[in-house]
Length: 306
Ligand SMILES: C[S@@+](CC[C@H](N)C(=O)[O-])C[C@H]1O[C@@H](n2cnc3c(N)ncnc32)[C@H](O)[C@@H]1O
Image (cartoon, rainbow, N blue to C red; front, side):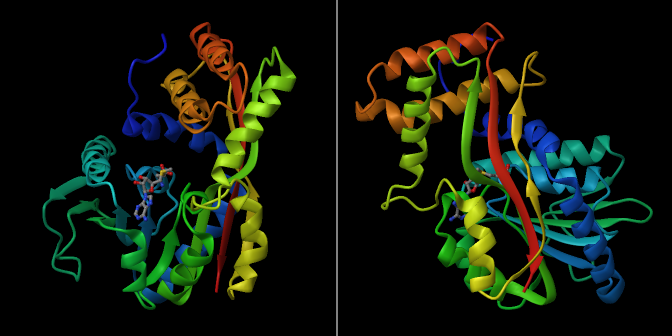
């Protein structure tokens, strides 16, 4: 595809779904699945809060991959109302295609009457609520409420030391947390015509993530490994969930790469710190257009309890 004239974050999130699908660390998902089944045996249902849930990609994925128990209350919170709205539509379309009966606008009569969507089959009952709010506000009001808190591709853009204690105190007794696709400080492109320039650009990009005035950080993945125990958490499983995008591009992955390069442009382009940055970014976009550019970006999935 040719270089886009404008960018849509929702399109980026949609394109990211299949990249994440490939990346997610399966042994960690296996542990999560087994633990949720055990919680459901004990309680009858499972209450999930997905913070910074975006388009609801993780909800659809977990259902599609049979990773959730039959009875779930799943709450998506995101501060971007329009992204949540698009997530609602995608969830309805996906659920219908997947054979769920979809009850829009109301939950049922089993304690989920406030849900926005009820997805059901002969055996499953998934009540979905979408909340347009700041995740930190919602977590602060959620003392010991949730059986699972999901934060996917989220902790690397917020203040970790603020988020972790709020997530942990929002968990019900025996609850779990799941932090997949947390960025961990490595980005690489191939081919690399000018390795020295490329290294300077990538380092500068990561440095912008670590700027003191900006929440989040480029090494949040491995920071979690040390910080989780400091806040009283226990890691049950962790593993790499690297994005690997190669040619020929599948789905909307050419757009995904163009959008990722626009992040570099936004972060590094205006600073004037890197000579020949504009030439670098133009060449990288052109390499996507030619179907030649590959990407590797390192992430960690970290999962546990308190
Ligand atoms: C990188 S996206 C990840 C979306 C989704 N979890 C996924 O993996 O596709 C981060 C999301 O977090 C949301 N977000 C960022 N800060 C937030 C906050 N303080 N409260 C709620 N949502 C937030 C953004 O609107 C965005 O949708």
